[in-house]
Image (cartoon, rainbow, N blue to C red; front, side, top):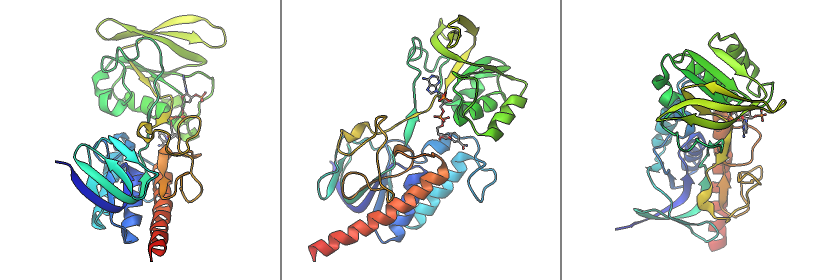
Amino acid sequence: MTEELEFDTIILGGGPAGFSAGIYAARGAAKTAIIDINMLGGQPSNYLELENYPGYPQIGGFDLMEKFEEHSDKFGVQKFSMQEIEEINLTTNPKTIKTKEYNFRAKTVIIATGASPMKLGVKGESEFIGRGVSYCAICDGAFYKDKIVAVVGGGNSAVEEAIYLTKFAEKVYIIHRRNELRADKIVQERAFKNPKIEFVWDSVVKEINGKSTVNRITLENVKTKEISELITDGVFPYIGITPNTNYINGQIAQDSKGFIITDETMKTSVDGVYAIGDVRTTPLRQVITAASDGAIGAVYAVKYIETLKEIHV
Ligand code: NAP
């Protein structure tokens, strides 16, 4: 039977933005819940290490998220993991969210569902997922001991994960569509110094090939248009992220890439609905900016709840 539950604030997504919002909303005396489609922890749970979260010069992503969760537990935030949203009404009052087990009602909803890796969209990519194509070096890196792997992309994720893969692989190619990396300079320098990493500049993957598992990829040099084959046992695409917003069905304004548009209080185009962290249009996607968004969004969600009380007096 479906259980009926009512909250002041429901936060969709239990990553750094969601936990931070939970802490601020609960401390603002709002009855608060976090709902996640997966286990709680969000994307950083898969990061090997973070070196840029203040107060922690070096900490595992999973460990940091555990601290966030314990902190939100301390203020009584209720948690619901493995909850796929079947139906959501953001424009009604209260707002309603239906999952298989629960019918949730809330005065405010804070969206913190983050983003997922983008696909290359080339032949062989879907076919070889789990058989040579992976989007998580930390999860799958150990399978590539003494093998050759190719990481695609030039951002922080690609370069950091390529460095991580050198712990296992004999050789790591970084295939980038330009001849200059986007990653932070400090990360670039580490990669340039690593003898196991070789860069393939100005190149894109055209096809992923293999038999039972990947054994080579077809590359195109974007300047010369030359086609070449690269022998590799694995491909790790890290070409950016796409927002997790499929369930929203056009109820709030999104940009051309699907990221949710907010104002500086994290308010979306719908009253009482806020968006925080990687899921929104923002110039920087980091654990600290997600946590900062969470604080702002929750404070303004609590203010919005106060205005509802005034209307009903
Ligand atoms: P990103 O910064 O957007 O970089 C994506 C990379 O993939 C770019 O180099 C881009 O090339 C390339 N690319 C995009 N589409 C492509 C395509 N179709 N084919 C080939 N290459 C393509 O994405 P990200 O590295 O996943 O990072 C996402 C966000 O998380 C960023 O804000 C990043 O700073 C942050 N992050 C931070 C950390 C950290 O601080 N420790 C770690 C990981 C991620 P161009 O450069 O030519 O555009």
